[in-house]
Amino acid sequence: MIEAKQLLKRLGWSTVFISVSIYAIFFAPFFIFLAMVEVFIVIGLLEYFNLAQKKGFFINRYLGLMFGVLLPLPHYFPGDAIVLTVALLCLFIFNFHRAFKGNAILSTALTLFGLIYVAWFFSFLTKIRALENGALWVFYIIFIIKAGDAAAYFAGKQFGKNKLIAHVSPNKSVEGAVAGFLVTVILSLLSKFYLPNTRLLHFAVLGVVFGLLSQLGDLAESLLKRDAGVKDSGVIPGLGGVLDIIDSLLLTLPILYYYLVVAQNL
Image (cartoon, rainbow, N blue to C red; front, side):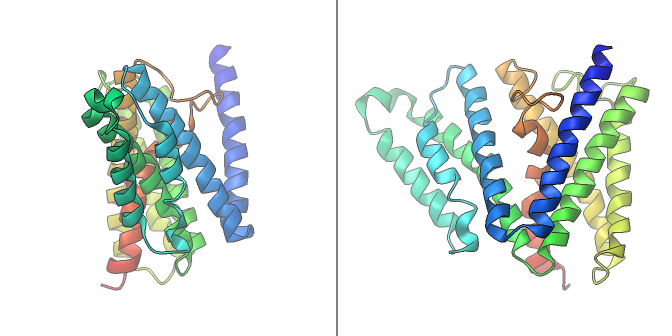
């Protein structure tokens, strides 16, 4: 009964996120899409900061949030490298205070890591959305990755017998990982139907790369949660937290963006 309730919560909240995402990607003005990305970044950063603080580390969450919300804005003005540089400078200046000098290395490193891992990587969604056929490419990456996640989850629940990396994520299985990878690759190949100008070979390569990176991203966030001693990054029923939702996307978004601006015409 508990498992059934969890499944219903997962499906219910997934339906909400899918509906909102479809609207923001295809029908809403760009600033609405940007606002949605900003919300995910703010909540994701807060969840990451909470994980770090559970280890007893000091995080400058206010500076982190301030610069985190700036990172998706280079659609309007160039300069995410400038944002990260100024963020690092401000973190150093903050740690000049006598009371914080003892934690300067950890505080600066952990805050900057959150900015890069959560805010900067996820901000590539806005860069992709602004490109030609950007809405379709945003749909592509979210669709193949999250469908792969769902396949891994359900296949793991039904057929999972062999643990993948039990000390990092005890619930993930080899069978689930294989199912997730295959679904991601197959859906990438099928994306040729709505992105006909891209060569099928490119979809095959992207499917393999994203099928691997999405699972590594999932495991990477599981490693952070395991270290912090928590099961979920947040409190969204059936899904965990925002980081649990976007973890498999984070490593794939920069790769897709640079493929689109550099490699697609090769």
